[in-house]
Image (cartoon, rainbow, N blue to C red; front, side, top):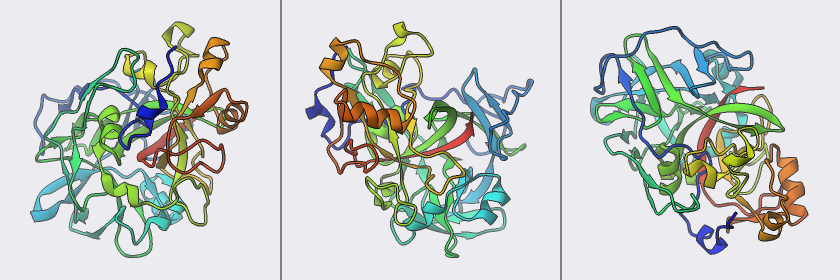
Length: 363
């Protein structure tokens, strides 16, 4: 395995927290808003026991999840559609059937939260998204970093997936479709039934397997690789390098760059090299599970890479918890691939980028 030069990783646009396919979604649309072929009708996949209440169905083989679709209003009176994935108050989390993420309140008063108000059918937003472009990602010979990385969906100057009605609470409500098209992570959308099916990724938190949606990234390369919406305002969320429930709106995520490749087997492979070469999801490691005071869908990207010595010594393995990452970092087997402040839990340096990814099922 070739170690990515850290000089490449010190650039401000370098890595994907959530990873994913460079190909745009093949979208089925049943009616309204964006255009596309008719939605496919068939048996719905089962809902795992560990899925959050709002999940309608989750297909573990196809890596997709179907969620409720909400209609709102974008600037100029245009119709937009959004999902709800997390909320800062218990009452709102129960109302929408989503994760409770109290830490999101620390983002209030920053550009990472946009103001909305209630309209006749849903939120009236100050900012929105242009879904008309297609992301383009061309992997390098090793996979990462890609030689070409162009985001598709782009939020305007006021867009953020985080919203508040001014009542002191924050809701994670990413927009997924409007008259310009649909999000790159959308697989199917049914405006009549008010459902949307999105691509999933799987990863690990505390050694447990989980599934999560990726909807927004705060730097262009992140959004391009994830096929998510470029939302630079998310960078204003406080808590770089910190997981404190008292001050931080973020929680960490570790993408491993040069983990085990596909030849190691489906239950061992991991990393951005592997993901960009089409071997499967990057299998990232999240810091906090839902239902904990430290959980947040705003993931503070903390990339690591196995050292040449670890590679030569055949020490490379799949990591599934922050404890395992911290241990490998302390032993000198992995090293920082970011150039920002150190994550206080594991010691590796942050990238200074945010990925908005909500865990929808765990265990």
